[in-house]
Image (tube, rainbow, N blue to C red; front, top):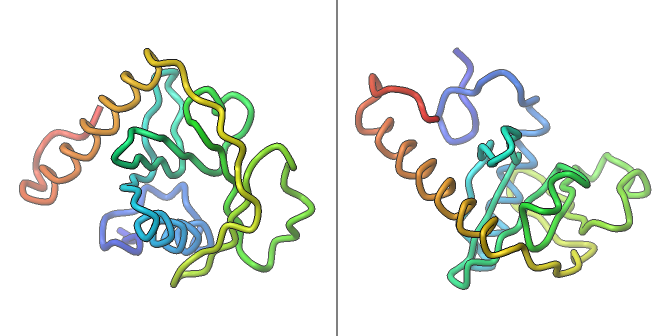
Length: 145
């Protein structure tokens, strides 16, 4: 089984380029005080490629579009330097990433989530993080929700 850049089994949905972009974006987010998860299940059954939260509870998400805007305070697209920036929607923020880091080239507009949505997403974030840590300690544990 192929492993992702963290040494965890990849589920096959991500290309090598997507894994590389995720690594760089997550490094940027960490440097800005955000904790992040990849492939976070959302309340509507979809998944965010990357979701991040800071100590104030502000959520950021990348790589999805209009239906995902309600699940974050700031929405970004993350691309490699080989992807033309002009292909990305102007209504979202833009991050350019490589395996070693990333840079925000267009800041996303702040649009606060509804408090009920924020609470539900914070719980999902916490459960997913705890489940993933559990699986590192106990690989035969049941899969996350």
